[in-house]
Image 1 (cartoon, protein in one colour):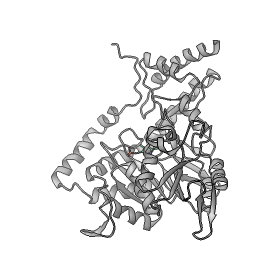
Image 2 (tube, protein in one colour):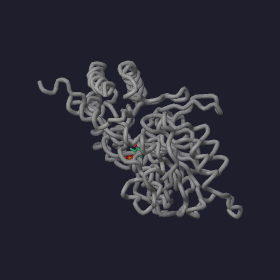
Image 3 (cartoon, helix red, strand yellow):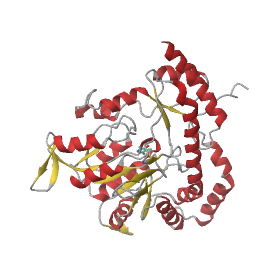
Image 4 (tube, helix red, strand yellow):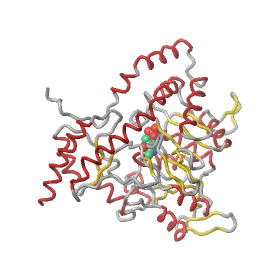
Length: 401
Ligand SMILES: *Cc1c(COP(=O)(O)O)cnc(C)c1O
């Protein structure tokens, strides 16, 4: 009985056990038809996922990373361009930029929401870029390359502040690609549109990941691009399939980046539960808020602005002694994570790019202090109470220091 009180960081077993009969039936059907690539399962999932995101089109691909790369290329990002994003994200965001032939560059985050600061983006375009009248594009003066796109990352299940980002992008002719890999079903209240908008419906295109731990996860690797632009959708379909729009008619060089039919069918089954699962995550976030709010200044809870309906892919708190709190939770059998411990500009992979500590101080401070608590659909209040008890012990020690 040593594990009685353990709280896992995430529970991938229970939802699959509950859906086992349906998932196994889908697997048997795939064996019977042997239609493993493309076909009605992929078409059906694409239609249903586009509907879920209030987007006109969705195109299934092999991962979130490929979704980002294909979206960038299909939307018009070219070799030698600069694409701006934030340092506090998963590494795949900038990997995809480089894979699309562009150079990643950064603007800092907003301290409260952890997503792209529209003011920092504005400042970047105003102070670091100039209009090249010959091409009509804005060129980064120091790098001598055109800035053609921006990737706001909808981090931890919360969208970036899209109205001002879209406005700045329009003024400076930037393509907006949403990194919605953590935000399936998240919503943003657009004052401009005067309505709630779904993640994946606001930029020129958006990338989703169905990595198993995401709010909607495949039973393996998978992703999708959503867009309202028919031309972009068609280009992604060509890119994911070796650059062919018709068998053996290769118009461009593409990739082997398709969504497996069997994963599409698994995703259709799970998609029917996603709205309910997201609601459960929101309810768990509300419970954490009630349990943790009174613990004083040593713990900062997530901020949900009035324009956001977050889907809590992660529940991320912040504290000055992150290592201390994490150790205490680990000792009590409670799973935690850090998303992410090193801001991208300080990673070894970009050692030759010249970034240094101090370049993006808000991302750096967040990376030093954030801690992700257990969060998944089906998390029990009693489990959250256990987490809160350990956090309370930590907070009381902090307050006597
Ligand atoms: C998961 C994730 C990706 C990459 O998705 P994969 O399916 O693992 O390739 C990209 N960006 C963010 C923010 C992610 O969380």
